Image (cartoon, rainbow, N blue to C red):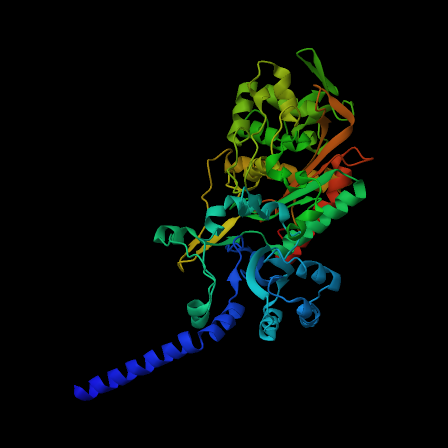
Length: 568
């Protein structure tokens, strides 16, 4: 016991001596050194979780991440006039620094904080630290980075100021703010910096397990290669036809996973200062409603088939026009075709044929089917600001409103709502939950895989097969004269062309159109549903002229990229 006591006393004496030497004898020297080594976080330097995209092999692609760098600042009150040139030359040997810029700031003796460089990497920051320059300080900063630049910009959104705090402002960044946001943290400093530096960092007192469990990284369903291909197709489409904007969605119609979503023109969240019009940040796939045109005929025909009031062989006499409530409804070309069947209604996109189906069904039953398809409700997609569809005409007492709705005029819905409804034609008759989230990796080390069960049944499975068969014949026989038929793959599709309504009057432009196109494949075991649109393309009237070839290009890409086996 005596021997142990001697050792403890000796060890304590050594510690006391070292502390005296470090804190008193050499305290001033270590204090200066610690001040230079301490890389502190700036007050608004936010720590934030990451968002990843999912490659087809399940590997991850960084979509939104935090980058860490350093800010170099000077205190002009400390740097003597004689040291101005010396300090500049030393700093300029490490970082890009203009002499006039530095001299202007170093002469502001009344200030103690002048930034001279931002986002300096660790290697350069360490070199500056070792220069031991009086009045030069280094602080750490973090910023949001989007490695894909414009890739899926409208779906991702970005981080911006909400009042005095940085927060997700659009897209997934906003929807999953609570998951991505991190509690305020102190920066890392070594033991000597913590003990001897006068710089103090605040540490969040909120360290509850409840908060920790909410924090995590997001894995999204977007496949980056597919997303990039869709964006390139939309750019080419927009450039070719001079449209105001164009958009597209690629979805798994069975699970509701969104493989790609894009709008062109897009933006680069890394360089938001370049954008003069903030409306470009809005996502029209979710936030805008449109009259969809003749792709609505697919829903109308499916409803008639499911109600048992028509079959593909049912016929009516087409005079090219019908009159309801003292209003005339014409076919797109104003021509009548005599006795035609329901397949011809889809092949030739006959407005009078769609109205005939509604007449056979009755307006109340037709309206019920449209509401069952979800057109009267929001989809609940995990993006902010989803708009409400404008479908009041489906509650009108006038027959003409239901007839026009049957071919996509008079009611306006969001693209994502339309995609959801059309997916029911492809997947056997069920509504799905369109979503981007695939997985959350929590900071606690736990993970949560996200999936959604199919929703309510809208149409019978045999109806889904029948409408898929009819839409496949549209591609094989009618779309661009049957020239885009794929010999080894069945593809079900339909085009749509709608007049654009004037903003300040209850009438339509004669020369402005909204073009839509949807299709899924293989027709009877669909892996993907593709929806594309173009708003106000110039010098062209019909969607078959603008959107058919982009759709075929996207379809062939997906077949090859995912190695989908032939089905015929």
